[in-house]
Image (cartoon, one colour):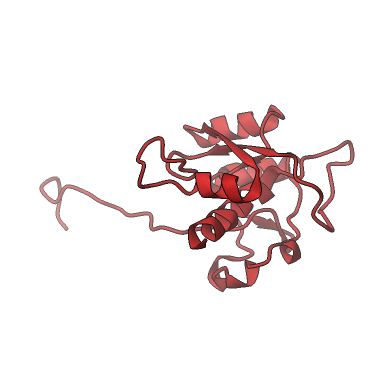
Length: 162
């Protein structure tokens, strides 16, 4: 059950960026959840939406699909530019994108704000990750963080002084 909940949080983090889609008016933030459509088409980095096909021990999609009845379809994006293009094609519901791609999608009107009140465990998201410049504009969240990592500088100490 904990795995399913973790995936639900991760998928919300991914899905909320694009699932609302834009209409002629650019779309509006959801006020309530509607009926499920039975499938979600995601663009994600390799390793972000694992279904056990790469490693049977790493599968958080199957339990989510079984519990919710929602089929998860994933297109692995290889670059921020590709992810933006795929989202702009209209074929995908959501993207787990880097900050630069997220801001391009926001600026282009390709995504709408997320109503974080509709996310049951949003309060559990680390406060230091909420409302950051890479997923929020003018105080409106356009995505939900689902992890963090360090950007490390590594160099060959034989190539120059430390």
